[in-house]
Image 1: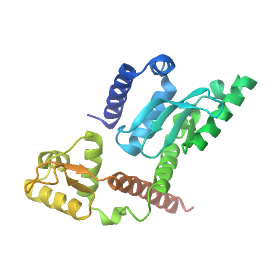
Image 2: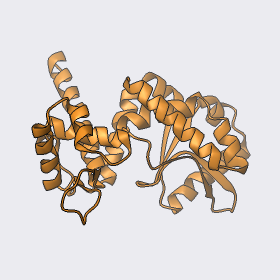
Image 3: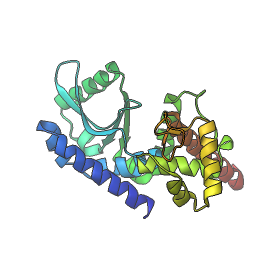
Image 4: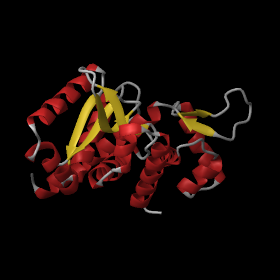
Length: 245
């Protein structure tokens, strides 16, 4: 299964699940999810997070004036308000009243501790790598710099196991690690022991002597975001060096 297929599948599953639980205006907006919202989720957010767990679509908030407003995608853990903005919808034909409402919405998000994070459709369509790099940077800055391991401190297998566990969105076993790394039980157990020692994973059941299932610690996600961001920056430096810049 390709990365794009995994992202698309998880987005569709998330959308269907949240439609079942929604009502009123939020339900109407979820049913009208368009190409802009899909591009934001599938091509920008998912490649950075490698999971949509903790994402709420069309998050409802109450503004400072008491009106309801909706955020395209809300990251519950980092309180990121991610928005897809088309030029026609948000600029070219906007009325004065709508313009005022949008500004009030942004102020209200800030008042509620929500980090307003907009991407235009043209940016996502023509410069998706730049959008993803920006999102990596935002996640990195919102993560505690003292609580992550750099790419050099994690082995290739450790990084891949964390990414795979994020994608699974559930507890994982030695068999999952073997599937992810395509390695035998001995190497996979070494990877698990190392991740336990670095406190990036923990046993699913803490009171058991023998453990067969594990879950990620909260700081594991920021580890991947830092590593991915640093990797993209290194690639850019290498490219510029080759071009003589």
